[in-house]
Image (tube, rainbow, N blue to C red; front, side):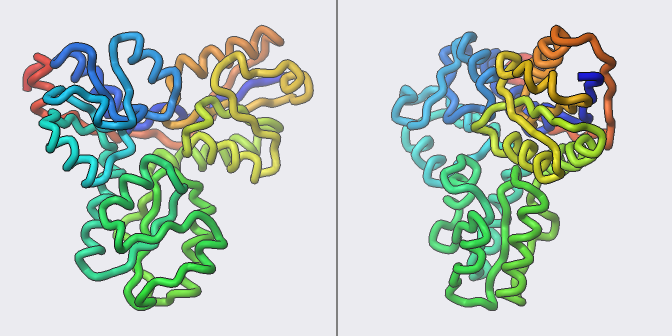
Length: 314
């Protein structure tokens, strides 16, 4: 190893910061135990740090005592889950990423316009489950090329494509092309569904791969956008590995490569990247460079009522 190159942007996106901030404010406002439905973001370090502070993560609302606050994770939930929460008199604190919420609203709109929604996403992913719950009778999941080639909507002239926000930009582009070939009347959202942070991090990885012979992606295997970063780097022709933390760094990787790029998923805290770089530097003290491809300035404001309940004023 002769040099380390850090990608910028990397790590937390505005949606993740928004969700984590909401949990922090909810702890201040309501104390603990605080219940969160599903992992607030898909990163074990973040989840453990909240558990250490008294946050309880559940998959089933039946595990939340009646009348208590419950936080919905950044991935969003279906209307059915919201109705269940109201039925149990739970105080809903919504940490859904605003960009995920945008896709929910698109699903609602197109369903009322009598369209079949072809939803490109990963089967079983929390975001896909929540979004498809907006109009289950009108949504068909497209998980890959086979699905895109085989799907048979009831009316081929009334179809629209929506997308999970954390997918590979290039892969989604390929699937949309297949769907457009099969359904020339296919409608698309006014603005693409893949979020700005996913797009920016994938573009940064492509540039990183041009300068490095290996790319390390720091993040959780459960994180969709993190897995896509590794795949994008690999597609660019370099060795690419995903590590959850510094313990995942292998000495033979460092020995066998000269310039190593490092990036992280949108739900990965910077401390995890710092620890990975520190572990790498134990092998060899080398220069560290930063490759900045775009500056991100997007910020989402938390709900006013939660800010006030946390005692932070207006």
